[in-house]
Image (tube, each protein chain N blue to C red):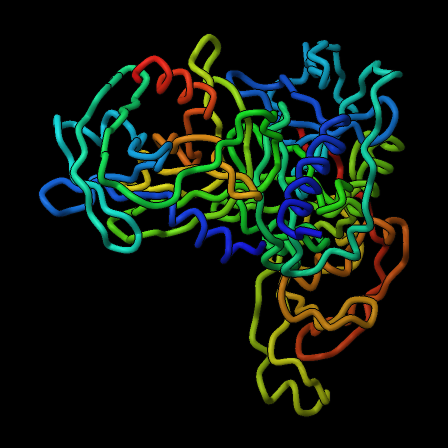
Length: 179
Length: 295
């Protein structure tokens, strides 16, 4: 698989979260009928989701944790591919990663980089996957994936030139509790 | 074989490998910088991050802190060498920095290890810094604390030392070969000897009426505007002399002067070809070593 094929695969599992017909962020197709995004992306009780192929589906915000900055959306009529999760391995510093999302409304844009570090930014803080790649508003809630296309985190914020993603294990814990 | 996962694993392994000789250097307030265990007991870091010269500490990859002393520094290349007691700490695997070309994929590392990824964007002289060596310009982010850390190739070999302190806008790295030369000199002398004549100069246009009878191709030369008392120049050069060449090398601007005055010329007798009162004459000079400046 090359970077192009990787981008194609990730676009299939990345949804756009729409608010008033503009893109308010990205989301990851987590399981059939379920989408994960950031809490700061899903601010209403209902949102509209759109797949890369243009199909839309209404979703209800089933759980929202502003502190974790995660939200779980239920969209029974959302068809299509779901993410493969990298839930079993360590994330190695220096390994290649890609993010797909809708930065500044550009649909399905891919950025590539490497893992900068894994852990809190300050002592005692929450753990992040710190990524050496460029994110912008619109990437929030979208997938950060390894070279196999497996999701390792949910892109959440930017600190200086660093991109910060919530590690997949933490997202899984949130989803398990919310469902 | 799948190329992308293989590349990914290769990069991660490169970080791991180079990270074994990567230290945090505590020599300034707040953010520590990075350093590389270059030779047994010697850690190289970026000179601009060594703000204090006492109570220096180096934190090894295993988290242990060891005391360090400053061996010397080369401000022109933004390098400093620290001495540490760390017999069991692996030294960096150095790569052939002459083999690094524009477009090569590289990683910059900071203590931790933390990683940044990009390519070599240009290779050229760091002329403005009075450093005669070529340096690497990097298309990557040098994060806070990355100065003094290693530039690593895709195999995990250290090919340079990174610094964001040498240029306001550029991310630069000093090639490993140059770093090794600086380490040699600092260990031997505790400083980088600098050749000097003791003149202040300025570019001057050589008029056509002067160039033609002397068959001079050069359009510019340097005019002596200052001669330091007791300096090598004071035995032969006068204010107002126009220096055309030095030891056969054309001098068109003050940078050419610096390029000729390399450290290995210290003690050598060379000839300056000068214009004085419309006449061309040869002035013998002995290249001296610039006295250490007080900090």
